[in-house]
Image (cartoon, rainbow, N blue to C red; front, side, top):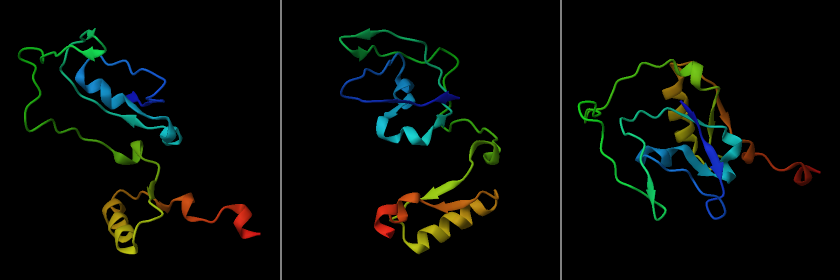
Length: 121
């Protein structure tokens, strides 16, 4: 598990040593998400040449199978709630509720759906 690092891609530099490192970064505008990602890789660390990662190859004999890995997870330990876009149609909200219902996770409207306080006065 790795915590996502939120950066300004214009001013800051991401530390990329293996191809999957790109998944550890996200635009600073999403910092409120406090996202954590699970990344499985079999690539050794590599260097940077002229600002670009040097191509690396998986460790011999430890390649990830094309069909991937099955990892059993308890989503209720990873997800507090599912927030639906304020622009989502009702049918989409219903589909999301149906899908996550088996995990007993709350589905909530985005706070962006509500009018700002100054607009309610």
